[in-house]
Amino acid sequence: MPTSDHDELNDINAPIPWMQKLLDSPFILLTLGVMIPMIVYNLWGVIEILLLPVTQ
Amino acid sequence: MSAILPPADRLWYKHPIDRVEWTWIAIALLWCIILFVMMTGWHVWGKQNLSTETYRTTTAQFMEKTQAMVDKYTVRTETEENIPVVAPPPGSDVYLLARLWSFWPILELEKDKTYRLHLTAIDYNHGLSLQPANINIQMVPGFEHVVTVTPNESGTYSLVCNEYCGLGHHRMVSRLYVK
View (cartoon, rainbow over the protein chains, first blue to last red):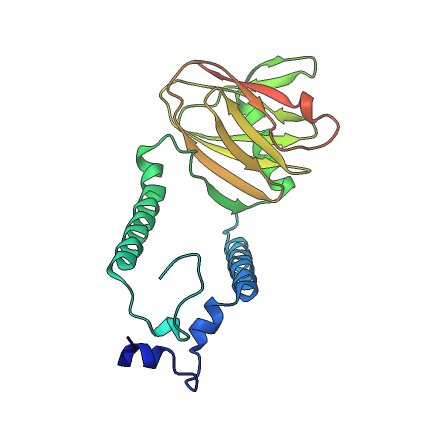
C-alpha cells in the first residue's frame, strides 16, 4: 500500500543526495579509504620528524 | 530491508534509520572508544614495549659521548673483537650504538637501578631486540632513542639485531649483563 513516505522516497524527479551517491560508489569509497589514511599518516610522520628536538 | 538486496526505495538515504541499526552503531562506537582507551592504558598497565623519547643527533656527537662513557667506565673487554664491557654508575646516561655488524659497547647494569639508555645507529638502520625480555626498539641513524630502564632481574640478556642490515646481519648479536 503506497504511503506518503513511500512516495517521497521513490520520487523519480527528486535529486539523489550526494551522500547516497558517495555511499553507492565502491570505487570512490575505496579511493578515499586508501588516500585519506595515506595522506594523513604521511603528514603526521613528516610533522613528527620536523618537530623533533636536537639532543643535548 | 535486506542487507544483500539492493535498497527497495530510490532515495534510500532518506529512509529513517532502524532502531536495530542505531543499536549496532552505538555498540561499534563504544567498542572503538574502549580500544582507544586500552591503547593508552596499556602503556601504564600492560607489558607494553617501553616508550621512548626521541631526539635528533649526529654520528660524531653520539660517538663522542659513547667514547667518553667507555673511557671512563670500562671494566674489561670481551669477545675476539675486544669489545669493552662498561659498568656505568646507576642513574647515569648510558650509550649503546649499533653498526655493521655489532653493538658497541657491552653494558653491565645493576639490578633495580634506573638508567637512561641512549640508542642510535651510526651507519644504517638496525634494530635492538633485547631477549628474553622481548624489548624491541629501532636504532636509526641521525636519531637518538632514549629509554628509561630499570632492570628487575639479574642475568645475561641477549641483544639481537632484528632489522635486516646486510650480509652480516645474522651475526649481529651482543649481550647485556645485569648484576
